[in-house]
Image (cartoon, rainbow, N blue to C red; front, side):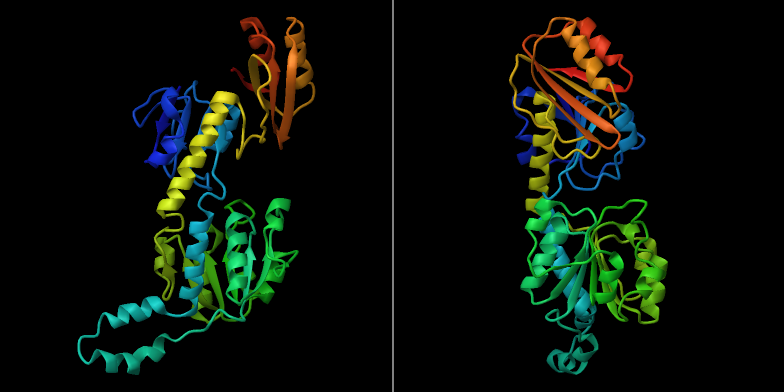
Length: 382
């Protein structure tokens, strides 16, 4: 099988694929694609393409809807870079508390009697401590949860809100973290607000004049998630009148860089050797497991489904989550006298996935019959 690389992928990740693959940037008609930040929206998606794995969490650079229509499974790597982003978020809290950046820049201008000038001028860069302050965390997933726990260890009070909090994520949270039911509760209680949610139609510009008005005067904002979660013009106005004391973001834009006092980090959240290795390993493992065994883990457009192999042949069907598909699918196999050893079906919103292990291979006619079922997107025989 062939894997196309759209970005440089860490060697430890590519090592997960082994000798069964041809891997490279110049590969044509790939079975799978490994990508980091390369824009794919204008790319042609070939007929052989079965899977795309993003070495990172965000998938804004991938045409998800078009992939789904073509039966292409899109994976991401949630949690692989979480520790790296968490550590930068702790740094961001400190940068929002004290004018370290401004102080360093000022210190570099000193050229005579430096010690005396430092003692005389350092008060301009004084700030506040984290201990005893309240951190509001919007989104308590892999990164938000780690930051919330770290803030507790730093002596902060923490209140968080996550409407989609999983049971597993909840188990990993420190018991002292207060779970708010609404974002407004978090805004009202917090001295610092840190964002850890994806960019969606519901979260775009969630930090704006209206939401800032619900926060404490002098709140300090941290955004290491996505640029468009925050309305730059509204933050500029709020910083000018003192409603927002500091804004630290990992997403510089023309609008953000024009705001006096903003600390703009050049998208370094996951830029650690460890994060890049972890993301590459996870992405390669996901795409390998799907191409070889049909198992799905961490897909953003199709349901997760993992089933141990128990037959000679496996038939994997991606389809719409509508009635009668499974009935027609099994009928096509039983009419050919094929014995079903095992079967699992999972759904995710409008999409579903059915995996069937058979005692022997289906004929081309049976596969064509399944492919022709209304709602079926792609059929693979492994």
